Image (cartoon, rainbow, N blue to C red; front, top):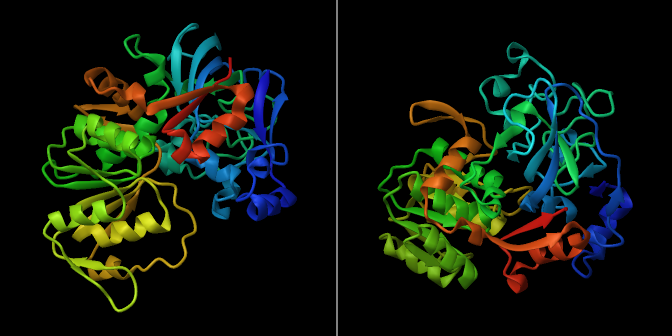
Length: 416
């Protein structure tokens, strides 16, 4: 099968960090650790596994961070290389083991890419605390090699499909997945919406965990699929208050308004005007950017995770307000945390998905997201801005990296 595999080496790291600004050949081109390879189709590791044909796989910001060497070294113990990338997977079931109960052959499925204790073959009473609670995105055993793998050896370390050397990710023709990872797609959901299950579920999980005051103003910073999905998730989950979405480009701002934002602003002057509109007063220190007192947003959701976006979040959040970090922030230097203690601000990170309390039931976030997809008339398919065959993976990654020129929001790869 064709598969897009990534491997790491110190020479490639030095090339990427030294020349990545000048040429993308060292990031995802001929000089990079990325290559389209012919690999064997993985066999089923056990009776509770299924083989899937990949239909579409989205490119995530974490994929780009890895390829551009911006991922923090602290995650290295929780992945294994070389790995076939891709974790936003929409697929069709080709074969199931005798223990697979959630799907049948022919079903379209969204794949939860998390490699939990259950996936590693542990019983529920043997799971770590996170997996036992149904929240495997923080699994305590992601750094261990244990459980069934296609090779028959212990399953390599790694928290996600796409970051595990034994389990190919979605930038390939075929993958295998455990019964617990499979979520059938309702017939009413088109494939170009279904492929958004994973990123939209991150937004849904965050909003369900935050439980914001439904009448309070919220600022959402960022215009990628997760940030725009958060605007949609807030509104479809019942938020009635003002939602201000900050986006760089007009196509992103227009989509934010369609998905539920009352107001869209650009970074800089537009955002400043929105901040003053909350009743804030601006002050200019002797050194540095202006600061505000009074007003502010009770909740700021940062879907970027950069030094600039976090700095803005700290300046724009109201006293005793909350900042939700959804962007994949890594090492950040020169970030002034004065307001964190001086304004009694709370910062919380949210990651992944899992079992949620929802309308009197305990459901996986993917199942809730599928219900919400069917209940909304928002044009979610508009989030998918470009689609590329796997053979054009360099063009696909180039489109994501150069969003200003390409207009990319969510770029998907179609292996077959």
